[in-house]
Amino acid sequence: MEESEPGFKVISEGQQVELDQVLVVVETAKSTVEIPSPVAGVVVRLLEPVGQVVDVDAPLIELRTPT
Image (tube, rainbow, N blue to C red; front, side, top):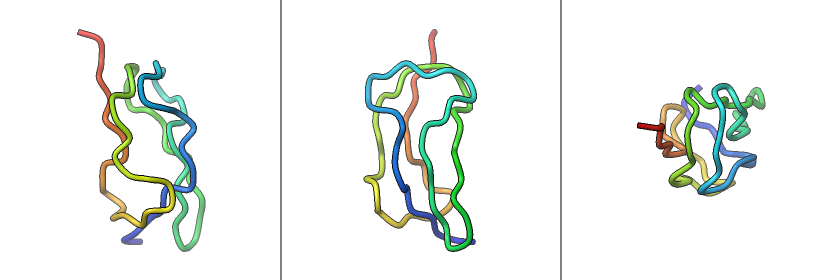
């Protein structure tokens, strides 16, 4: 599996998210996968639009963690 497509995002910029909260659902040739947040924080920026085909390891969301 080398490419995925963000199917839809369940968060928006500026939103507070918790550890393991689902951020985005991506579709690949064989499956649909929910991507959870690796940390608690705030969504700073959505990096890829819905429907854009991207490399599997491409960043999709920029998060800011509390300092």
